[in-house]
Length: 72
Ligand SMILES: [Zn+2]
Ligand SMILES: [Zn+2]
Image (cartoon, rainbow, N blue to C red; front, side, top):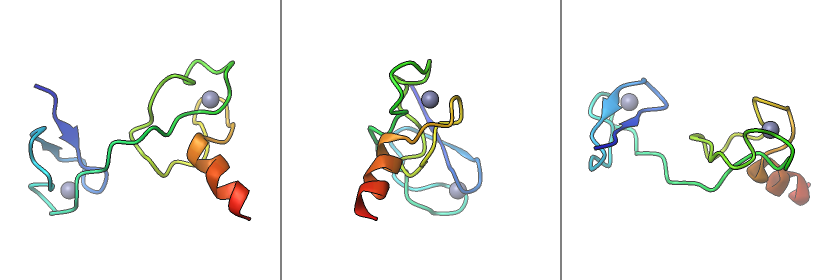
């Protein structure tokens, strides 16, 4: 059974818990945020942080980051 780790306090929670058992923050929504650079090894890896703006592997904007850019 896969669990999820709270982004705020790093506590491991059960997969069917909707809130962190330690700090009560909401489970992060599943996202499709990933690196937008097709040549990056992380291109097909869904990021655990749906609001991450840049790829930590190659520095390119993530799909979420591109979305933000298109608004400004
Ligand atoms: Zn927490
Ligand atoms: Zn990348």
